[in-house]
Length: 103
Image (tube, rainbow, N blue to C red; front, side, top):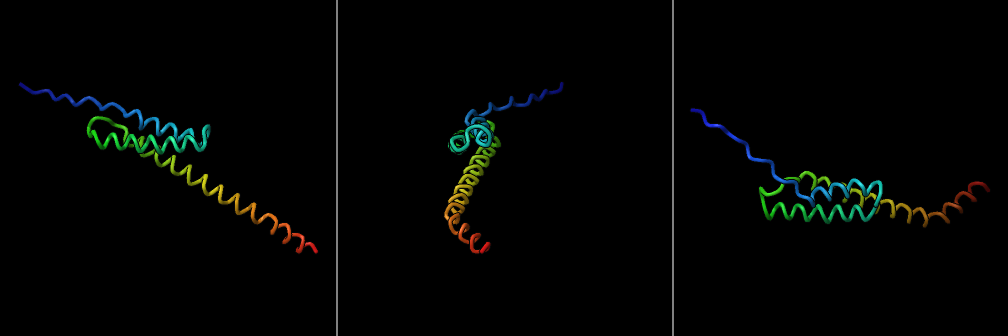
């Protein structure tokens, strides 16, 4: 008589991890900075919950992807703000440089 092996049912997906991933994606298209902040917060909450209760939820990849998307968006936003500030500070200097070049 042979024994049958039945695999374990799949773990339920962590909702916070999925929310983090969706917010990370939408932060590039619909809700720029707030979506990125939400992705980072919910990503950390999902990872913390999965670490506290191992083998209860799946979705660590979604949480990690949400964190990467959120942090990347925040970094790009910060770089853009710094670039715009530098450009605005250099604007009068650039005008003087062009006028000296023409004269």
